[in-house]
Image (cartoon, rainbow over all chains, first blue to last red; front, top):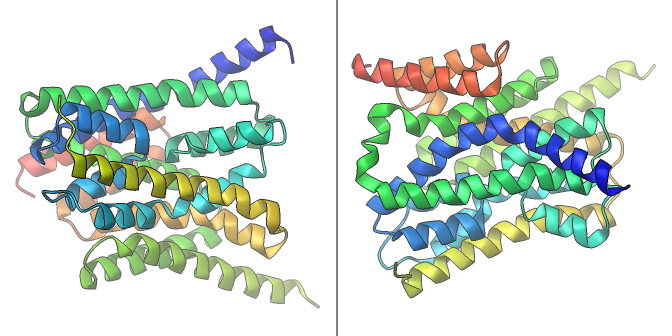
Length: 235
Length: 100
């Protein structure tokens, strides 16, 4: 691949991520503002965004944040919230034939939900290239880190995110992504099982176990419906 | 611009946990073949995980959140992501202002 094609791919990746950047900036601002209310300095909030780069687990961390911070509790919560990345990276890893081994591992460190979803979508219609992935990931990463920093610095000036509805931007993005994965009745079974298990677990079990519970229930539903289909087609 | 030591250690723990989850999938597929029903199961993970994350907001937080989730989902059928998200955020702000 020559430099011209690489540049084209990089720019194409940037174009693909641009609407998501507009969506992530308010979420990053909210994260920073929430972090400031929990007593984190802008440097600490920015550092978390830069090193962790996983919005869901960062919001959960803010939810359970204590002083002094408990690294075991926070670290375990991050593991639990992000355990989905194991499967996301396994799935996207099969689409990275054009990547060298080091490039695969480096790319996976930037596997935020939005980046992963856009990359999976791209892989359906074109060959995934490192240049395209870099164009996708770099602006999104910068937007997340800088908006988190700005949110923490501005803090109270942003107003109450709940009144403005900005706390809802994050679930809203996930709902849009869920709709994008719709494939028919089997998806309905997965969503139903996952949603029911998550709501029930969240009601009865404290902490963030509901995410793992919902994911496992959804996976189980997929295995059950997949198996019954196998039986139907067997003569 | 200070960084507290306990906070730094907690952030590093989060970063390590997150990197571990992101890299282990790659390691996994080098050692396990993902064909047939296993691949099907893997493909069901994204909607299962995303649903688990949003379900408490959608179904167990309040009427405003439930209605706004419905608006967002419906908008996502036809409109681009940014517009759907903006509609969802606007709906939840209006519904909360109405006291729902």
